[in-house]
Image 1 (tube, rainbow, N blue to C red):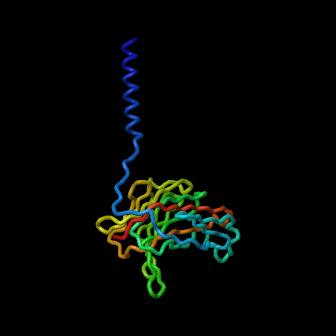
Image 2 (image 1 turned 135 degrees about the vertical axis):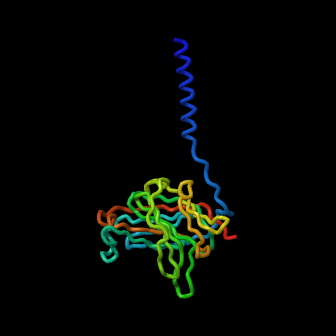
Image 3 (image 1 turned 180 degrees about the vertical axis):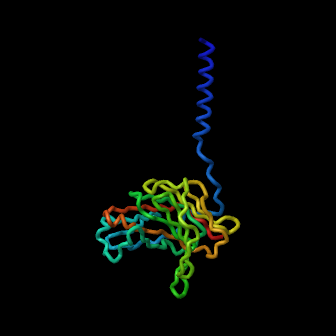
Length: 230
């Protein structure tokens, strides 16, 4: 009986050690570059749709659309689609940023723009990343007003539900390539980018079903650090 008890105790200890190792969090990736927590943000932004608002509180931007049914029918996305509006939130030039994003619902298509600029003819250039409700990420490029898809919707296990917090880090590495890190893991890259570091901002969206079922939309983007252009 004593021998059996001793073996059971050893088994429990081994099990506890194994479980402890399994539950250890992943080591965070090293993010290169020099970073600052100082940036000058726009303080006044208009909502993208009638009845919606964009509120800037420090380095936090809150997109609120409580009653999508207020939207004019001509502005409603087609069935099965979504529309989005992009906002630069700083005029300063940066190589990357760290931010979190969270929506009250899991049906929106939020995202960010970065490496942004506007030429003398008023044409915009920037990179855009969008996250959808299916744990997928898309990367687009706008070059002097012309859009190109660099990466189609791709599913990543690192992307949480949109109703949970997702940490997004966009950074430029030592080779000049752009990394897109979500929740501690670099999941996508833009190799040999054709755009130069510039302003960054947010993407506010409206999904057709949000309008159809009058689902309130509230998405919070909160920035913490910014990669210096050096």
